[in-house]
Length: 139
Image 1 (cartoon, one colour):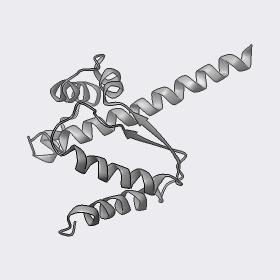
Image 2: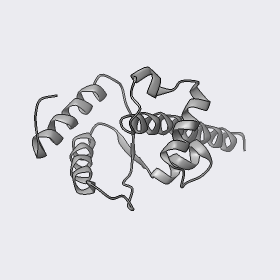
Image 3: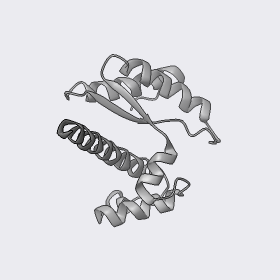
Image 4: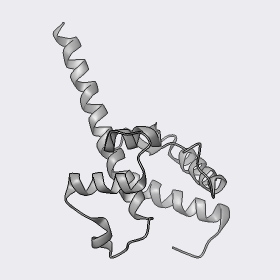
């Protein structure tokens, strides 16, 4: 990635995401919603996410999933810690991303884990919606 800061960095990141999404036929985009109790660089994250949402608005239906929903889906607890999420990921996939990436820090490992469960969450809710629709069709 080029050495960018501020709005130029956010524009670059959103262009990267849009370019990838444009290579697929997409009707729904799942994004993790804001963690309202978060601390740290929350304004930077908000600006970056806002630009991404703006750029994606005409690409597909954007569905926001709260961090609590993702954690509950992955671990059964909406207040799970990052270590619990990683453990659930390893138990589900039999893959430890820390070993594959030869990296034992928190990020990007937790981002990979969250993304995996958001994708699986989408499949689960789409499957449930299909089952509910089939039940209605039979009535």
